[in-house]
Amino acid sequence: MRAEHEVAEAVDAVLSGDRTARIQRDAARVDELAADGFEGPAYEVFKDDLCREVWPILRGMLREGTLARIALKWCKAVGRPFWIHPDDFALLRSSSEARDEILVDVLMRALVSFRRSALIEGGWNPDYKGSRGPSSLATYFVGQCIWEFRRVYTAWAKDRQEWADRHALFDGSEEAALSNPKLFGPLLEAGHLSEDAAARLTTNFEDILSEQPSVTQAVVRLTTQGYVDAEIADTLHLTHSAVRMRKTRFRKALYAAARERRIWIPEQLHTKADARLRTERGAV
Image 1 (cartoon, rainbow, N blue to C red):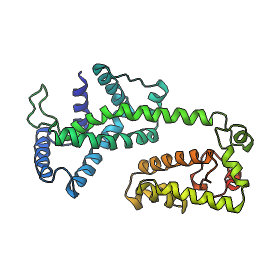
Image 2 (image 1 turned 45 degrees about the vertical axis):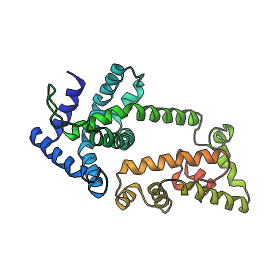
Image 3 (image 1 turned 90 degrees about the horizontal axis):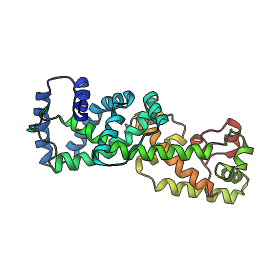
């Protein structure tokens, strides 16, 4: 079966209603959105609806291995080098958190390329005369997400490997951290600085936070105030995976600064540490 047909069947298996009627509704909506140049409040609603529609489809395809397999097939067909480590393949099939983390980035990238190629440049054609006829917008968008998977997976896998290398020798003890400069040695040593130095470090933390996107700032500030992920997601109207993704990215920026002895990291953002270490490190 051709990969394009697999995508269409995966979408049709989840979405209810007649495909022809769905394509007609999609065409009418595209005409409405085109009047405003595919931007503005109506387009934001359209994007939210589209993401909500395809999210379970993409999660299912990633869990079953279909999405990754099609991405590999498409990249091979156009000569793009792409390889998925078997361990990562297994993780994406077994871990809902891993799937959500990678799909958030896939969706964000696909929304940009979809707007350009499908809508502005007219790549989506409701009158297409191919072997299966035209596809719905959801099917086209899922295909766009599969194309973006290669780049997102590569960055995700690289981050996981770097994180594993940095923490390979860390057993949760202060001795292990201090013995390996790639880990938390500089961060733990920061606990012995003077009050003036500590105040300066706190200022640097705020500087780094202020450079982040506004949503990330909100997630981090609510986290340091003691709110859990579910409460933050409800407050900011985000998915739980989006909250975790923003915290993870900001945590990486903090650890990079901590290794340079410029900041302290808030207690609530620490990972791989027991209660004693969290107490010793303190919080901003």
